[in-house]
Image (tube, rainbow, N blue to C red; front, side):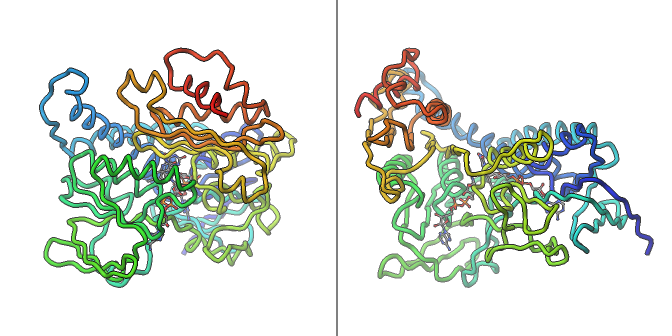
Length: 464
Ligand SMILES: Cc1cc2nc3c(=O)[nH]c(=O)nc-3n(C[C@H](O)[C@H](O)[C@H](O)COP(=O)(O)OP(=O)(O)OC[C@H]3O[C@@H](n4cnc5c(N)ncnc54)[C@H](O)[C@@H]3O)c2cc1C
Ligand SMILES: NC(=O)c1ccc[n+]([C@@H]2O[C@H](COP(=O)([O-])OP(=O)(O)OC[C@H]3O[C@@H](n4cnc5c(N)ncnc54)[C@H](O)[C@@H]3O)[C@@H](O)[C@H]2O)c1
């Protein structure tokens, strides 16, 4: 078989947020660069195709359904909303399609023929083999390689699970009809976003969590506040639960579950599995490159994102760091600073915010109260009910709890969790004050526009 071999300065394997942003930067730096992406349907990476953008597009539809359903409270009469899931999915597809086309255009402009569409695997330390989607076998070698291949849904080993047709975060976004009763396995980010979305579309929803608390990394008071809000929407929770067996009987999926000391049976029409993400390293043949992975299969890197093999870096979810698009983007910035701009950046100096896109949103930055205490800080904690914020009252969006943790000695903010309308936006203000290492009094006394959700920070910090 004839194999075409080409040499590059740099090869990027996988075009997630980091990889697709790095490619044009390397080209602009004068490097002969190739980017290998698995298929034309995945151009642009997970975020735009199967993750952040499609989910938030569908969350927007769920929010409209909810607004219409509750319109009478605002003095506006509307009929009960009818959700046409096929049309919701069509809207999602069109948002994804336009993002993918833009990404393809950008990559082709930057890389020309060096955007290679096919799955890559290592055959030697600095050599990868790619069978392109057109069926050509290519060998590519490079001085430097950047791995940015992301993750896929983790499927737990539950007896019977693989014999029933279950949903993942990808297939649930292709359903054409609303589930009658959606069971969600996993009470983390993906589980909760889909649970509320489908509840607001009009489905019965039950969430199964293995711990006593949902969102296990959050403080208990915040996790309970989130659960309360979701229960008010009509979502049922089974916590401290272990699924023992899954079966299908006719159209129903039947779960045998141990909850505390009791064994119960739960039946639903659909089952979504959302218990975390697995790295896509298994098909990369990293052994041929000598790249080390951890026990879960994520690539081990140092704080400059270097693997154990000189000249090979790993960026984004695949390196085992926090799984967010903005972290993957910052991984790109670290590489650019160190390899292009002559700087010296690492992962240790960055503050990473996050936002769970339920309604109200839950945004977080820095340490939780539990973490601050574990790390030995002397702290002051303030909490504010979202209903105290004037803007929340005007909008009729008074659910939520805002919390901040401050270092008693320095007055610096150590962390904050905001469960309120537009929390994902408001948290950036807290983050900037933290990054600037300003005292919390800046947010207590700063003149903030009235009436905005951010103004709630005046009230929150006044409680300290
Ligand atoms: C349902 C869902 C919702 C999410 N919502 C949010 C959110 O709202 N905000 C947020 O910040 N994060 C969110 N995330 C997390 C976010 O999507 C990821 O952290 C982010 O996409 C990681 O990007 P990455 O750079 O690691 O690579 P990815 O975006 O995962 O891209 C990796 C690319 O590599 C390609 N690839 C894999 N193997 C190969 C190979 N062997 N050869 C060639 N190409 C290969 C893949 O096709 C893919 O295109 C969400 C995740 C999910 C699953
Ligand atoms: N808005 C956002 O930024 C956003 C949205 C979705 C996903 N993400 C990212 O994607 C990552 C993956 O999301 P996820 O929800 O799959 O993972 P997760 O880690 O957020 O939550 C997984 C949950 O499943 C539970 N679990 C694990 N095994 C289980 C089992 N066998 N039975 C029942 N429960 C089990 C865990 O205790 C955990 O609560 C997130 O951690 C986040 O970084 C971000």
